[in-house]
Length: 396
Image (cartoon, rainbow, N blue to C red; front, side, top):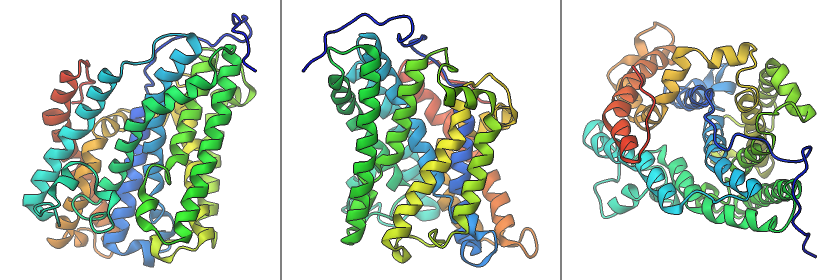
């Protein structure tokens, strides 16, 4: 039975504003890219497998989950705002143009330059179109060739393509219903989609289809959580303390980060967490890893979603200039750091700090990546953002 459309009451009407810039999200990108740097530096230096702190650095893959959640939240929020307010959703052509110009130019430049120096495997072959098309995660032979980190870009691009259709589906679930009912139907649908994705992820692991583990369906859980946060944010609007759990986040952001730390440390020392990649996992550890990464990522992100101006030491950290700067140039850091890290290691960078190859490579990798990330932002990403009609943030 279809419910009759009713006008929302004051108590149930979703809050304003329709659009909003989340100031602390750039800094959360810094947290995400730092996790990616740590796991790669730990791998090259050997710390992931041999040092006591390798239990933590080897879990830097959670940085990718933070990136996924940020994308899902920011891109889905305009759609859910439109659904809750009976307004037009973002135009597909505008959405597609903005996504292409944000991702493709910087990726193509990095892929081309790094292929010439210091060198990438597989790009200048008959498979070149796979790498330039950001499709490499769909074939086992190309999964970790070219820019290794691009497996996650493949999933991001798949999400960009799927999002308008997901938004149509989720919006249709609430057609003819009150705003509150629309909101809750989206919540339950996203919970089901996230759970279904995790079941699929475990199934394809059990049948040893590694290629399917690096697809949007298999990795949809962090996107689902980001979209759930977008639904909550869109419904609450400025009244972020209307729900008890969001009021707690607004007033006690430190609790979120302390909980994330406790959970992360507990997971790191749990026998269900692995220092190695997919090859050594069991079905239990494979599922436990995804759950742990998503939980910790969500706890870290919550203070940036709700009450961004409410204070607290996590928000003060995220508000610092260096965190904002690194986050603004994080895409360039993400694209360039791994090949440059290998080059730094080859030319003797691991001996910068005697007795600590990890710290030596980490310091050099951070410095080099920040410089190259800034250059990518200023020379490639800023011009592309202007083409898509934005007034981009200027980073000095």
